[in-house]
Figure: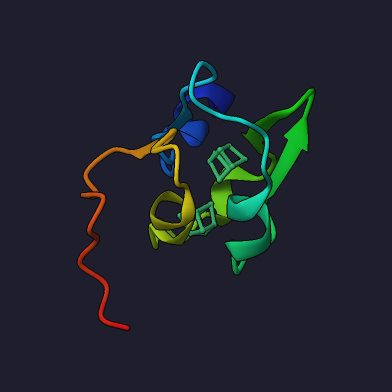
Amino acid sequence: MNAQNQEKIKKTVFSVDEALCTGCGKCVKACPMLILKIKEKKCIMVKEFMCLECGTCMRKCLEKAIMIEGLDIMGTIEE
Ligand code: SF4
Ligand code: SF4
């Protein structure tokens, strides 16, 4: 019934350290779901519910600005 509870069902813990992000757009191009965008020269996620938590964006970011909770920078995904 409560919209707040529904939001908690799927919530990707994705964050960008704005101090590190240069707005280069590498993560945007790498995301298979096309849910990252650059806004005011910083990376943002536009549709969190679509995130696969694949870690591709995090591995592409040379600045190590992206953090996804529970995923290591090396990732555990087999190529
Ligand atoms: S790859 Fe990293 S530095 Fe480049 S836009 Fe994405 S988060 Fe920012
Ligand atoms: S974890 Fe994967 S699906 Fe989610 S924003 Fe990054 S590249 Fe896109």
